[in-house]
Length: 454
Image (cartoon, rainbow, N blue to C red; front, side):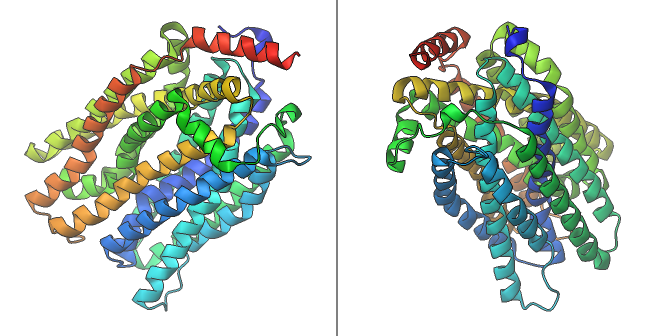
């Protein structure tokens, strides 16, 4: 249990979590809307969008590790992390606006290139923010359970941003097709401005540990070799990818599922909301459960719950009654959202514990390198779903805005339901072998404090 001396102040929690509000809005907007916006409004072929996101993931394999390592090595009066948050603010806002502000007089080829530059640029800019921000969270407290509280609030803020995104999507759905491009551009401009303000707030109010600067060596290959040789990190890389496939599925495919499988496109936003609200509201419940039963056990149970919830969607095409399909969709979304609250709260907390183990072995504080590896995994999960979605829609015979064949419907719910189910069951089994529990982490921190005192 955390005592009063180790508790993180609410001011620190609020300042750290606040940028998650903007990030949640932007990430969901791109994940849930850009594919459908591109195919149905801009009339870009689904396979082209799938390839754009695939290229973006390949670029992440370079940019994420680079930013993580450079963040670890940074020396400035703002510390190692906050200078990166400040530097990311304008690029994030500019590229997010660019995604939804393509000129109307572009040729199809020019439009494809515009979207490629905008989307790859946005994810690159987000890397400048996301990796140092998560690394900063691991530094703000060394307490085993306070980390869950800190990252739990960040997850809640991220989810609240996603909920605000859904409100924007509702506005877009209610708009005429000709007005969508104007409205989405205005929303992108507003979101970018708010994100800049939230990042500046975090930079000005948060503080970093000066003794962590200058602890990382000059060889980036050694840094990532350490990450891979860390047995706890290797296992978490696999588990993290699997755990995020489910959340990527609901972001990428829910609009398609509700329109073409369930047959109730007007309820898509409400179904996603039924996922998002429990994901945020459940955070205060997951934290005491993790204290009582252990972070490892609780996260493992939630992975199973998430997989089973998504798997249930595969049955929807076989339900004839529309109202029954709608009710089942809402129930499954709520159950999946409750499980997602655990992963967003406990996942980064466990990852921070793994970084402490690395310091004990290597003598370095490489939060940036570690969260860069996990950030690449997060985006890879979304990238896999977007790539698969593009190709599956293209080759199953999907045609926008018409009744789909049974093959197309089964293809959609196969990706949406069976794929996350299989992945999460495998992930839960693998995570059952994770051994860095509270007792082991307490001993690691005791040894680190002894070392630092000498």
